[in-house]
Length: 535
Picture 1 (cartoon, rainbow, N blue to C red):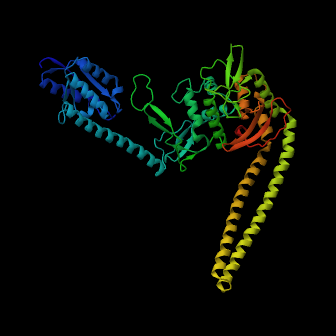
Picture 2: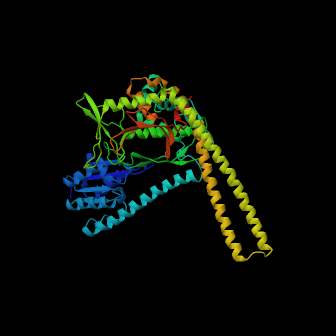
Picture 3: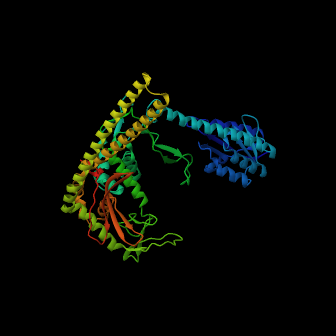
């Protein structure tokens, strides 16, 4: 055994540990007692926190030494310095046994490297793996309890543009608040993420890390933060193992986005936008993600806006020899009956843009809507108010009838059977009155919302005046997205375009729904548009 080569494996798995040198010293001393020689280049010292040790470059080097029979022994301070994943430890010990490499443990009982002993090591590693996972889960639970029970931030790291006060319950605006406000309002005006970074760089505003250039992911995180409208959320991100690693990384280097837990006791001073504007931004970001052209050869104005009525699937842009373009309906294995699988790109876009600009510029449209639609809504509200009064009278009659029935029962002028039967009828009637009142209440709230926001079309025209006649693709696209444009190809082969202003996830108001080749008859139901609140 004299002069046989050995390697030393020393590892720390948590930041406070500073025992690498002492691990190496103990391992070398134990190996030299057994007659091994440890060259300096065979000493591996690693700071590695992940359970997945096979991803560690230094451990891969150690495995190559074992497989290539370059060493005869490995010295480790403790068996838990090896893999915490049971299967990985079993494979490594099997490699050592097959290549006759002794694993020398300085602390604790020696490793059992025979075929039966490997299963004992498998069980020990499994118990270690479970204990580590439980500790990690305990840390996550402690963070959640800090947020849910104590109502405090989990990391005390304030969002960009704000800072915590002494009590950690108030977010106060700091010197970067104006920069955050600029980012949000630039995006609301239609500036792209890349455009926002250019605006910031042009003004000489440094990124949160002090760099001249703002990464687009940083802008994206600011836009998605609920702090913008005054709601602080904890646990919005979770560290996870990446699906595919880039370079020699380890541990939970990727992030999974969460909706987070709202903490109402943390007050956000000077919110920048309203909640409706925040929701509009999230919808715009999601729409951009879905409509990303990836490596497309051309920008398609109606990308993601054309649907076939038969199955509600989208058309896709198709470049034609870099000269023209079209929108095609193509599905794998398609055997349907779509009568128009091909739409000429330039002609279709011109027709849709013309109708969009007509909505935002035609005084006839505005006068038409501000006239009859307001009258219709007010008439409906008056009818519902009358229905409300009728239900109030019905409810009072029900209560009086119940009181009279109880008095008759007390005086013994009605039987138990008649009393029970009549009481059931009164309860049924009361339930019906309650349900009708609730339905009318929701209907009235909806109508009043529409009535208040009827003027939003004219306001939206003013907000978008600088983009209406722009030739830039981003401005043209922004107008169509703001109107929630949808081009529908019907099962009969006709084409209809729909525009919607405002609305929510439960639906919005149709501004225009008419064939592209016909004179439109407008039917507008407007809601407040997030752009209208920009000041």
